[in-house]
Length: 301
Length: 301
Image (cartoon, rainbow over all chains, first blue to last red; front, side, top):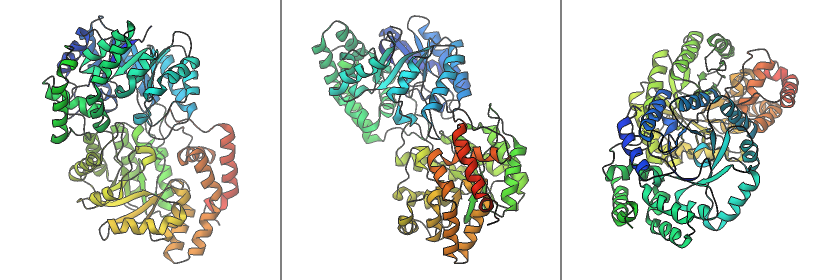
């Protein structure tokens, strides 16, 4: 499976002007490599790719590649509003050592299915690396229909799907629906940490995780539990993370993870403006959950 | 009234790599100046501002300013995903001769009201020119609530609102609701050509028009009819444009206007990819409507 298991999404530490802090990013990536995640994806939505200029994106990928150094596959978000920019980002990512490009149909002017299909075809043809379809309508404002997933999944170089996870009870049907639309060997994975667990238990190929980009231990343990058939243990781990999933629902995973990175001393950076750091009351809630879940988050439970 | 009457939005002619064709833009702007629109706004959504790099945006404003040359107020879209970028775009626009910046809360990561308020405060403080709040949830994916409009409208340098027009029967209530939220002298105007007419008849200050960016004559005539109290004549003009409004609803104003600019020979350019030119069947419909409405569009009816 080219895209299987835990795909971890670190934030991209940057200063107020959008200059990437490569060393801070490497510290985050190092934790992920040591925890044996299945892939590290820089410049996902959690990695704020739409907020970064081309040269800063390239610097982020190069810094991460120096740290993964072939031990763990490196992925990179390559999305852009313009098709030619997405092609260039993909070429840059390939040149910097990424093994996979994550391509979301960013939009401003609402796009048609044909426009998104043509956009993916251009990046698949000219980008120079395999692509994962990144369906994230909450951010891109374009929902990729199952019919369009089917067409995209048959393009040369399009090898995986990152799909929003449905509510738990619908996970099995959703995995099967996407499998029935996509070729043999095509990877069907899910994002949305709060509800992704059941998609893995239902046979999904990959969990695209925000929490796993900062605290990989419980997600790696979950993936191993599923792989060995210990579904009860897997669900116990997911349930233990409920206070964190509640924070994600209340404040968004991105804002919570920035606060957590700061609170744990891993890197003191703010999200890119206009996104604001969490207010003190919300930060206190994050701190309380990190304290409460400490052993789980650090793999000691 | 600092922002009143017909604000016309031309497309930004550019090549496939996003290089602006300043001469073609000037041809479009010249028509608007000659038709005596009340302001020309380059780099609106119709002007594809999110698809243009900073230096190309600057070139577009400079080209337009050379054409308006003080005869008609020049506005420019200054929105960006990053707050610091929006500030720079505003400063560039002011330096290039724009009299007003149009600021939309572009979003990728969904934003909170506080984040949008902080974003506007930064651009209003440091941008160096008056601002029009650009509420366009279909593109920005952030809906500015009336409570937030109220807060933004009280900021120094925030002087106007471009709001989506409601269905005709709701126009009067909507204009009054926004008036009651905003300071005396603050401009309340509307976009959405297909339904904007009734907002002007109901006392709205400005019509932010896509059609008016290519065919200003019927919109200028409409504005004059309203100003002289000829509401029947104004409504007759709006009704005459129904076939065009139907095209806008079916294909989006942006795509229709690109096709119309091409069909009328005013400039042969494509929208920025991934946006595709209309398919031949749709173009034929646009051609038929332009033919049918020729005298109206050219101000001869």
